Image (cartoon, rainbow, N blue to C red; front, side, top):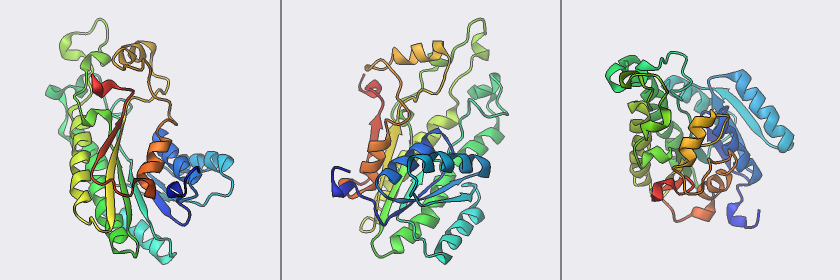
Length: 275
C-alpha cells in the first residue's frame, strides 16, 4: 500500500454475507491490506468457492470460514466463542449480510408491492438485513470494545439509504399498474435503519469503536439491458459501478487512514445522489 495508515497487518476482520457479490470484494480489499479474514454466510459451498477464488489472488492469505445465520443470536455467539477459543480476536466487523428481494425464491411480481407485501417476508428481510447487524454489533462489537485496542464497525448500506427508490426502473411493459414490480418497502427501511444504527454505534463506545457506513450505488452484475439503461440515465457518470470499485473505500474506512471519521455514511453512487 502507498501508506502505512492503510495497513491492516495483524488485524482480523469478520464479514457477514461474505459469499455474496460485494462480500467477496470486501474480503479482497482487506486482504490487500494484509488483514486476516473471517468469512461468514449461510452456505458453506459458496464460502468455499469464494475462499478458493481469493486464495488464487492472495495465496498467503489467512481466511477462516463459518456458517452463520445473522438472524440467529446463538449462531453468532457460537462463532464468537470459537474465535475466542482459538485466540483469534476480531478487530473489524463488516455488516454486509442482506436479502436481495429480487432473487428471493418466494417473491412474485405482485408481492413486492406494499399493498400485497407479506408480513412473513417483511420479518425475514428485516431479521437478516437490520436485526442481524444489531446482533453482530452486540456480540462482536462488545468484544471489540472490550479488547485492548478497540476497532472498527462498517455497515454496508446503499444509495437508497439517502433517497427513495425510483420505481420506474422496475416497470414491465404490458402489466397493469397494480401488478408492476417495485423495490419493496423493506429494502428502504433496512438501509435507512443501518444509517441510524451507524450513528448510534458511533457514540456508544466512542473511545474504543469507530462505526461508519458505506452506501454503494448500483453494481453491474448482468442485469437486463432495459434496467441498466434506465439506471444509467439517472447517474451523472452514465454507468453502473464495477464490483471492485468499492475496495479502496472499504480499506479507508477499516484502517487508520480514517482514524478521525466516526458516525458517517459514505455514499459512492457515480453522482446520482447529487442530483
